Length: 461
Ligand SMILES: *Cc1c(COP(=O)(O)O)cnc(C)c1O
Image (cartoon, rainbow, N blue to C red):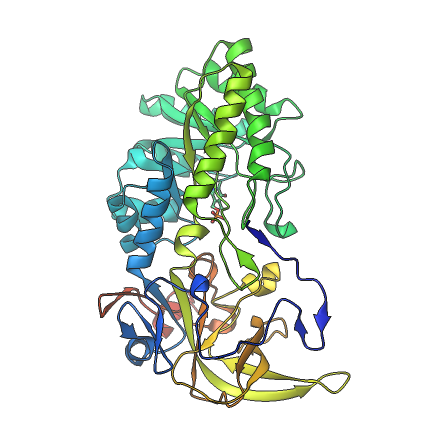
């Protein structure tokens, strides 16, 4: 059974789910890329010590295990055989990663002109690109249609007209999907659940807007309605949310067939597959998810007496999330006495909310390990914090680290591949960190660190 143990109560300084490890040097395998291992206490990924990688590129740095990324991409492709699997580029995209996605036979979702530019630069087949977003401008749409993207996911009535006009001007028929909200609240943090009716994305099924959107798309001679699209949220562990959503979306799909005389060829169920950030999380294997989701859709189609549409999904986090970790250097260590006399060790690192906003934004939990040496010291309850001017600038809220943790040590935080570098900022004029791909004992910088010149380039004085 998969699930997420709710944070629950605290015992003194730490949440109950956090257990003192028998060996604070050991890795918890489910949190790390597949090639990660400790060798005499030093963290190795892709066949080389991360200490050697950051000796070249400095810290903080994102280390990306290429084999792990490709393995997870293939795992989704193979588990969901017969589906189209769109990698959600917003989780993390670069030219190299877009190429890997295409090489592994996945399609690619983008949601901005910038992401589309990277995908085209990587020579991803435009027919395999899906284009998302709730406020795509006429100019962005013109570029997407002109590039020949395989599908645009429409999100508003205004946008239907906009795409129809652009396609008509360019003399093409643009395939589109209609994004619907099924009113499903996924079991996850409130801020990252995106299928409430009271939200900015999509057309509501309940209000009739989704049906009306499908009707208007079908009326347009420059648009081709491929199907409905539903994305119910993020970091989901349990298929019951997809089950309810699939039932409501397929009911609409059947209504469009019977009332508008149009059997939609496709259906997209979105992304949101959860990963393990800490030992609280127990994600399902893609094969198990595929089996459950396919059964749900097949059963529902049979009940409605309709043919099963061609299916697609859009995992982002579940592919790139676990394949990257962030490596920091410890700068200061401070013991803080709490009410009741317990103490917490604050470990300050050379990055923080500028390279990982998720802890501050979503109250997310992370874990970490001492990456540069073995330690025999007893573990202490630690909090890893950044160097920014915010007390909420926390990277890892609760973790056991060796009690002799000290300046100069390297700390690695797993599970930072999704929405880490992608959401990084220049807060406090931080230089956004590099992404370094490791594989077979070699490393390659695929996104370099920003420089002061990069920062000053936009400051025109
Ligand atoms: C964010 C998003 C995804 C990917 O979500 P993950 O949680 O990274 O799997 C997929 N589809 C849509 C429409 C999204 O907005």
